[in-house]
Amino acid sequence: MSLLHLLLFSGLVIAASSSSPGSRLILREIADQKDKAVELNTTNFDSVLKDTPAKYAVVEFFAHWCPACRNYKPHYEKVARLFNGPDAIHPGIVLMTRVDCAMKTNTNLCDKFSVSHYPMLFWGPPIKFVSGSWEPKKDKSEILVIDDGRTAERLLNWINKQIGSSYGLDDQKFENEHALSNITNYNQISQAVYDVEEATAEAFDIILAHKAIKSSETGASFIRFIQLLAAHHLSRRCRRGAAEILVNYDDLCPSGNCSYEKSGGNDTLGNFPICGKDVPRGYYMFCRGSKNDTRGFSCGLWVLMHSLSVRIEDGESHFAFTAICDFVNNFFMCDECRLHFNDMCLSVKTPFKKARDFVLWVWSTHNKVNERLMKDEASLGTGDPKFPKIIWPPKELCPLCYLSSNQKSIEWDHDHVYKFLKNYYGPKLVSLYKEKSVSGSKEETVAATEDLTVATNALVVPIGAALAIAIASCAFGALACYWRTQQKNRKPRRR
Ligand code: FAD
Image (cartoon, rainbow, N blue to C red; front, top):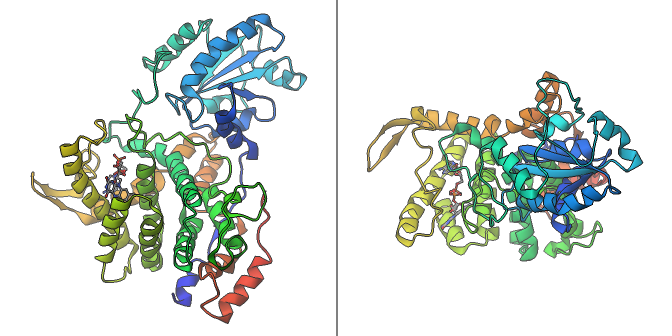
């Protein structure tokens, strides 16, 4: 690896987080609670509702001394079980929450929503609750009072009417009528933002679980991939988590011997979650299959790879190619996938010089996998019936990508395919964050988008740390060692 190569990553930056540190944790911790509804209070109300991937929220204002509220709780929980937490039957759609107005600290919050009786239930897009309020006679509020939710059945009926669904209290996991089966809807990719974070976290967990960094070679491969994530992951907290691992790598994995335990300290790889501790799990949305065992992680991994490919510069293209190939080969624990993918990597004889070529390589490689699986899944019946494999993108999604096509072959307009992929896995993929900006002001919208696309305005990550650590053992000479020592002394403090 040349010094030039290393310097390509010297622009690595991470930004300070704007969301409350605890909010994601709270969403994730639903998993560990007996109660499925999320307990909100003055402190976490805005941040939890801002961070949830769910499209809608129900907020129950209650008082713990109120007997009717106690009797109502099992009803509310029956509905919350459907929507909240990693075992949710219909995840990512409704966040069910409650606020105890009998707690003095919540008085102002309850007043803002003019809570006049207990329990009082509200419905609306989560973002509308953030810094929000409700008054009885205000027209056009997007926050509605749920006026018919006295039993679990009635509450669910009310919700079904709002969103045109037909959920039942007895639904079982993955009877998923909201699976996004319409693959020709261009906007759906924006829902994959959380999937990419989750797939990244899952990939990292698999590495930990398998103690998969077994040699200096796999260590180097791990570092290259983490380096790519630190520079180009679409999510700021994944970039930051990756940068922290890079900076601390030598301490965590001295001579390639990593310690993997999650002890709560600062001295093992397990204590450096790649996308932070608070990424909600079990929320695959764009990648959600209609069956328990389809899609999810591997779909998220593809979207991660495409989203990385469209973010790199020309000079990084071969590095990115190597990082991805080695990562799949060493850490994707699906043997068939790994071997096939490795063959396709080995078939590349000339180093990539242009990012465009790399973007198109990932795309055509994915299509080769699709083509093979189309046949396998048809003969074995193992595919997801709602998501049959296709050669992608279909004409409905990108008519201009097609020069001509017949049943046997497609002639692509590669310029258009490239343009399409750049936009689809670039700005379009992160556009959901625009909508989630709290007040929707132009400035915040821009800030939210920048936050996800290019890390700006940031605490500069130890410039040389990432690149020096990428050559883990200072094998590339004294200069890199010098950089590294200098920069490690300035490593960012963990929160
Ligand atoms: P996926 O194929 O996972 O695609 C996810 C999404 O990406 C699609 O919904 C679509 O929106 C988009 N997309 C589809 N094609 C393209 C494209 N060409 N370019 C850009 N975007 C596209 N499974 C096996 O059974 N055998 C294998 O050998 C195998 N190899 C794999 C190798 C790798 C590196 C990975 C990440 C996965 C592999 N898989 C393999 C899993 C398989 O490819 C699918 O991920 C899985 O079957 C789930 O399919 P899916 O319907 O979610 O769509």
